[in-house]
Image 1: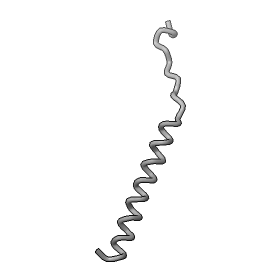
Image 2: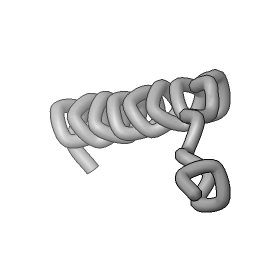
Image 3: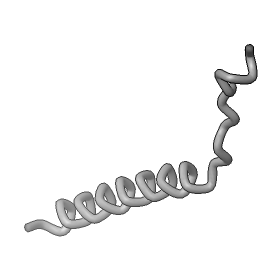
Image 4: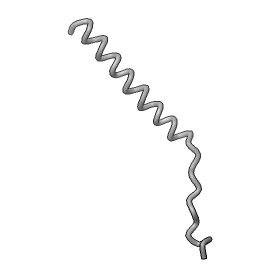
Amino acid sequence: MTTAALIIMITVQLLVTLISGYYFIKILLAKPKQEPDSYSEE
């Protein structure tokens, strides 16, 4: 494998890992939304 291919492969793997991790943490830290209670409307 050439040096350029190795650099591109590692860069893409890092980018995908970081983006996935960012959204994973963002979802974990998100506050749950209050859903309307169906019984309170009556």
